[in-house]
Image 1 (tube, rainbow, N blue to C red):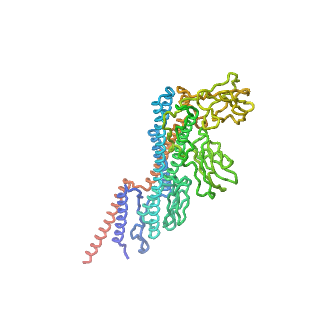
Image 2: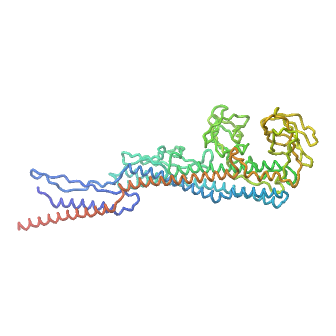
Image 3: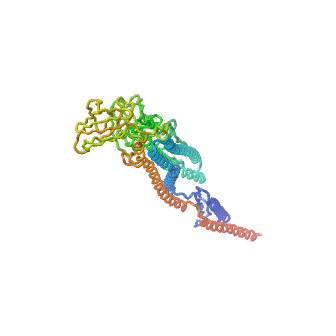
Length: 640
């Protein structure tokens, strides 16, 4: 047995050819997204024994592997998830911020225009043209608020549509990964191209949600979303989807389907685009819509109450300018029951005090028999409510009515007191004469102590005992703040009834509702409301115009326009913070990407050097073949 030079040379040529092929493939795929650099591993063939020595018999390519670092890939997926969430949040908030800056600017401008028109009515209270202009300003203000609500509703629909699109793509990826797993489980050895495709799909999946990869002994990979939702298990693909929202159907919830079971998924635990879209809808859009509804309630209630404090041009107590705040068209979506409730209670919400509203949403739960808890979803504060008849008085400016049925222990409702108001706001007054520019004159008796004052809230001419608005009409109240009693007298001084007790600081009698402020020594003081209508009287219009600067909202901390401006500022602040988070997440992602590329990416300079090295190796092996041929020819020549 002799050393086979030709065989050794052949293995060298074949190995070099394989190395050149791998190097060429790397160069060809240098710009292919998701491609991982490959390397060919060479090994020596089994040596042969000749005499007392062992001689090599050549080489061969034992394996072609991907250069792949699982830890670097995992870091890249995490960075991708964070960056995708940050980019989605910033994109959506920027769109909303622009909406509030452009279209939204019409809302406070129209409110200011309405106040300006009321100033004009105060200047010329009997001018029908000015009154008509004021009603037109009110209508434009209502339309602008309606349009802003419509824009927010469109944002919700658009976000819901994006969520559905993402879930559709996630399900497509799920099926593709399951098919790849099946190929890997059937195949012999690793198919680098299939593995690259698998990693590319998993990386894309990490844009939509946090991904956990579980390698299997079969070569396949199981995939979980957010650590809680199994999406791919071997060759089996699960799916996610959306279903009608609970308790509000127009706010779809996320579900996961496994076999014939459907489970609800908490999107806040998923991250990525899905988590960001749900967070944007639930934590930004819905609160913004509720706060716009709070503004609409403030506008309607404030001016309707002021109307009831004055007289219109016909000499009657003023009627509502806007739709009543508890009209069904203003109260759409105030209460929603969860599908898990076992009771059959139906809830409605009545607004009692607009100034006490905060724009928050609440969760009402029936914990034990007769025990109700109201939780503010923004602050987390919990209030225990007591049922009186069919009502639950919250102390937050609204009352919850159990309209029908009964609650079982564990039943829950979501309460949104201001929902629907912005879409339902409408001017219902059609006659400009109906603006109550005039107001009653309040006179304190000269013998009063000066320690007590009263302020009129409203009048109701339909109440028995109301003294009318004819010339000379008046009503006098003698109030004893020490005994908490009052007695009323007509314009002739005749008593309208015996001394009557009152509670708190409010009296509501004979169609007059007013508040009492008392300081110092309690005494009996008298106050006269002159109810006679005078066409040139503008006192109520003046008070209406002053409301632009009065802090009526949020328990006396904000004006009507500040409710909207605060929402606008909050969205601007959120947008700026989202931009900072996006820049940070992008930097972290770039670091992870660079690390992966440094290991798995194709370096053309390195491949060019390898190309030259393997070319020389190929040429050297071919030279051995040439040398072996020459030796063979020499041997043949020597025996001829």
